[in-house]
Image (cartoon, rainbow, N blue to C red; front, side, top):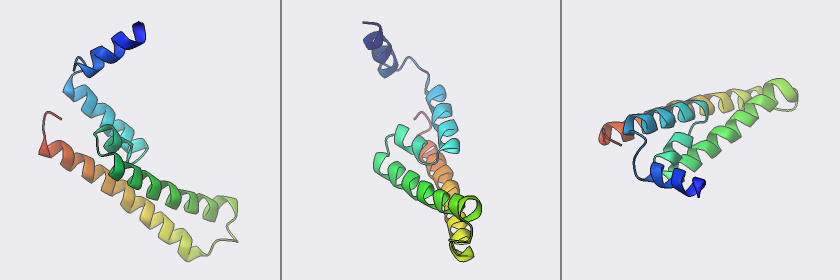
Length: 103
């Protein structure tokens, strides 16, 4: 009964809107795309998370794990794409919040 009470309280809006917004922002900074998923933009959030993960893995493998196996251009392209994806996720969430201030 306790779990359903917790879920009912949070779905009923007892958590203030600014608290939910802060959680989405914090999670999106750590894992780009996850804040968008929490905001209801599931498909876009998953695609952002997927691109960031794949490019981040390319960068990690290229610089630390097997640097001689991955060409430098792929390392730099992976890094640039990961950074652009991270910035894009922050901008997208900010625009989503600006479109609906109480969201």
